[in-house]
Image 1 (tube, each protein chain N blue to C red):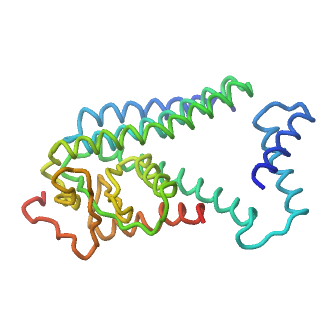
Image 2: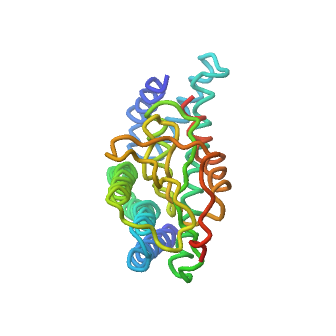
Image 3: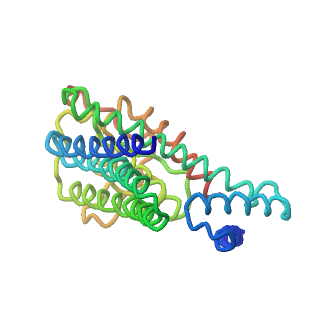
Length: 131
Length: 154
């Protein structure tokens, strides 16, 4: 019974890792690629580590697996956020099929200040960007 | 109170000698029961917060699973079905720790990526993979993730 659960968890984790890999190749811009990689870190890693902890069945290993998952969950989003932010500030364009960019023009010219934008001032999506 | 709770739980594990996740869970639940009997409860106490934290964790895990399935669909579907974009989400949270928790939760949820926080800490700029309409996307984030972060932090 436990073996089948382990198999299911390992297969699911591997599947999500593969999907994340395909997503990195297939997605059209940096931001979408970063969105795809966070799935590998979360469900992929989580399923693999849970499967491993169940398989070994030892408390020490299980605690280490949980700790590993916790550290991945703490650090992966920071990296994804910094890469996305750096890309935007370097002017990497959004994919042409994007529907809106409410961050456009919100940075001060030097980039050290980011203004807050009331929802009422947000511009409607540009019609030419609609797919 | 949380400190006392964990001390009691670890004490249970040490006394029973069950060094396992199941033993720790048993000790944790028993310690919760003991504290429940011996300490005052009501709004604003430890007993009001623990169920909220647990519920927030469950909601967060559920969001991750649902979002994973959506992203999986978009990885294989034609690219034209995506509607990515950057949306400004107004924040009701105060303080750096709750905002960091929310930004991390948003980035961990596949398909969304928090890009930056405004200098006055009142807007979070989020990149999303499937934004039908920016307003409904804002509502979605505010009614699920932000609400639970708020409940946990208050």
